[in-house]
Image (cartoon, rainbow, N blue to C red; front, top):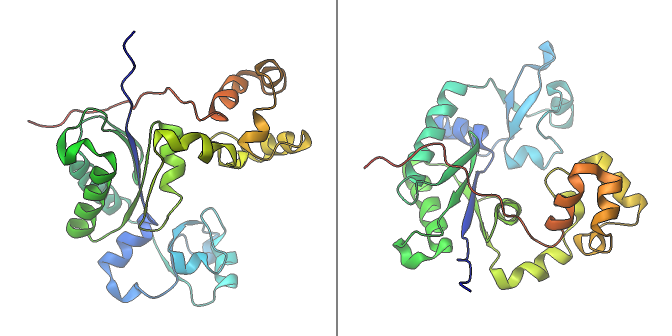
Length: 247
């Protein structure tokens, strides 16, 4: 019986994307607390902010008026989605140099399947580093990357060493990584599901493994089987490509 080929998935996520683009356009903002969003006087909302602003407790979806109270020196820049889309397309073109199996999730993040890519010695880690270097050199913004055997773990990994970092989960590290992973890190586990799990004394994926498939289905319906698999680091979803690389 032929053994299935090991998948190599990269998740690329731009760091504070809108804010980073605005700082690139106006370097004088580089060392200030920056947010992209609506005006406080017009009940505006923060779309994103840089890491300096985050140190003050500011986050996306926060009312701009509250953000200014937390950080009186906060500079709020109105969004320029046309520009962000242009930069996003430039990032996508860089990715296409390495693989044509790309699944965009939003303007600032995407999955890449590099399982069959032969460049860089077939190393997903080296490919991720090359993409990050290209984006930094050509577009003057930073992206973080997660490298793993599946989409679930790659997305978590890209957030592990943010900003401007790479985190790699090799196949033989999956078990050790997942067992202590907080259930709140599982995509789809919101506050309500997390509260239900807490009532069952479930805080980590290791705890979650104590529940049978039947119990998970009874308590969480169609989400039950997915919880069962993700708690074991299993995710068979393919990277769904929207376009093909130009010859």
